[in-house]
Length: 120
Image (cartoon, rainbow, N blue to C red; front, side, top):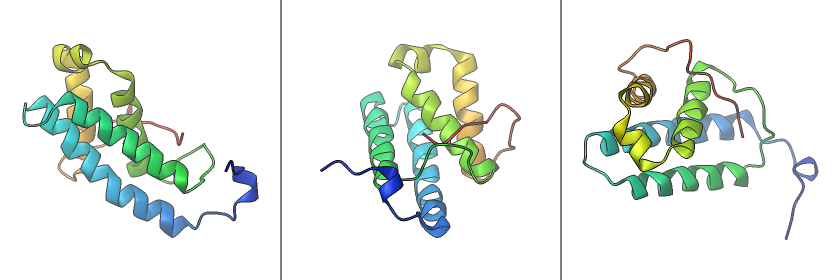
């Protein structure tokens, strides 16, 4: 059954915050695992798809993230969704962007000005 976002009650901020705090570190670890050769690219793509699927179940309207952490999460997710395996594994600049964003999401790196994403 198709449900319109406008027909859904407003999603509590707590649910959105919980989703981001649960999913951001997992995405970061998955991305770093692929770059280190400890996880497959296919598993990373599956992780991205699962994250988006679970987000859409919350029926949150697209738009501006609540904070820099959420913005970096969406930046990383959109970046990973847009890359083919050879682009991720063969481009050092892309690897830097993925690594630095993942490290920020894990609390071991700085937030960079370019880590700006939006809610899908």
